[in-house]
Image (tube, rainbow, N blue to C red; front, side, top):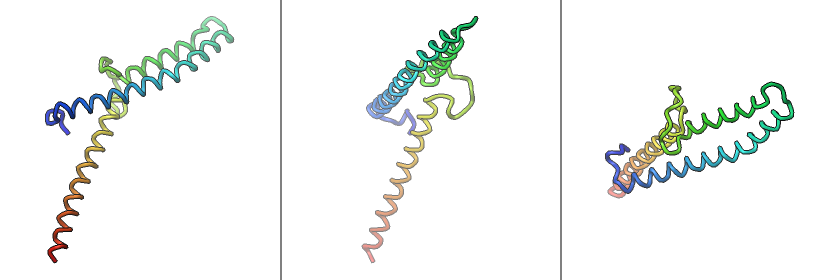
Length: 123
């Protein structure tokens, strides 16, 4: 459904649902990055050498990329890859389109079934 044709309440519900999904993704990312960053730091400390923070910096880079991908509050610039899954917004948009398409298809089928039932009743 086009945002211009949605009611303000429907748009608020949609935006709230999208934010909740993004918050869940962001929280999951944080929960995963906590132990991963600690392990990366531990590996660097045990390995030593001239670049003990190499693994830790890779975790930071991954965290930044995932932050841009999630784009929690819509302030991040895109990753720059023209791909359907280049951001969580694109993925959620595709899911929303599929749900709306199935819903409309179901409504059409329900109408067809109702009119078919009416025709049967006349016979």
